[in-house]
Amino acid sequence: MAARNPVRESRPQFWQVAKRCCQLAATVDVAFFFLFHLLGSPILAWVNVVSVAMYVVAYRALGKKQNGLAITLIWAEVIIHAGLGVVLIGWESGFHYYLLMFIPALFVSMRLRGAIAALAGLWGYYVALYLLMWFIEPLQPIAPGPLLGVYLFNLSVVFAMFSYLSFFYVTMVTSANRKLRRMATTDPLTGLFNRRHMTCLVEKELARFRRNGHPVAFLVLDIDHFKAINDQYGHETGDRVLEDVAGIIKTRLRTQDLIARWGGEEFLAVLPDTGIQSGQASAERVREALLTHDWLAPNGERIDLTISAGVSEFRAEDDLNSAINRADRALYRSKELGRNRVELEVVQEVALQS
Image 1 (cartoon, rainbow, N blue to C red):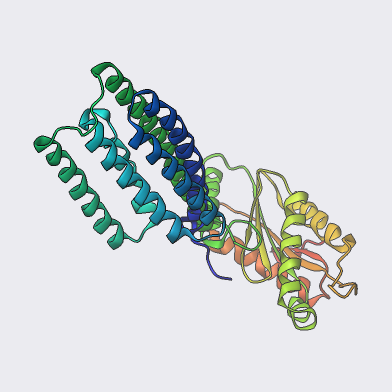
Image 2 (image 1 turned 180 degrees about the vertical axis):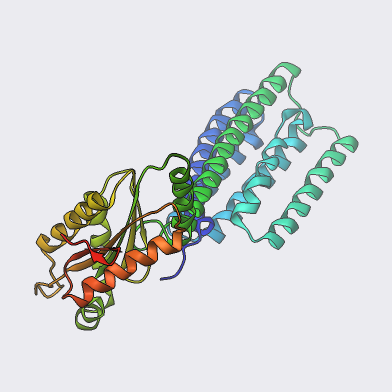
């Protein structure tokens, strides 16, 4: 099973945000159309009609996953619109602020090398536009009062858009980190802890045992004849069986119990504050639940599924491996005695059995 990349999985979220930004930008341009008619700037008013049309096409392109076309249209609209706004009514109009919104979006929507090149081009355009306004006067200047109103409107829109994009980026990064942590600590098929993370958690639990002496039980559970299930019904059915077994184990143990997929079809459960007899009872609950579950193959045929289990209890002289090894020996003994049973570790050469 291929590992998922949470950063790549976040890209579709970015395109959804891009669609919402198209909607917001088109709404702003509709407002600009009426505003610039009132201010006596018909060129900028009709530019907004073209802008709305470009955003509509970009929105539909995003819906069809034509992301390259959509980004090209959005880039063209913002760059041309910002340049015209500055040239026609002046740098003080604040149209240049719209260019800055591309900076964070570049690194989400493009590869690093392309993003750096686009950023350099954006910086050059921004500086050139600024220097140009040192040498020319606005072509359609408006009165200082309305100009201030346009500036505040543009500043408010850009402020709101930056806030929205910042919230999205923070949410995206948080979600990606959460997925990475989950991938690092859990088995992707069953959702249980993986072996590495389970080892870390159990070591902490055993340190607590050494401090207060509370009992800790170890359960090693193995699906009987699992290879035969894979061979007869296919690996997809085998995977579904593993998922269902993991779910049943979780429902039959306590929330404070630690459960991991320890191997292919083998599971490890560590039960804090639990003696060996209580551990045996917990393993029996799991065994009986699996035995009574209705296991069906895709063709409707019933699958005979059972588990064998070995149980041990942590001792003061133990380390993690010795406690698990004793549970493993009990598991092997349950296999030798016919499977579908729970066996305890051997203590003082006397087998403790249910």
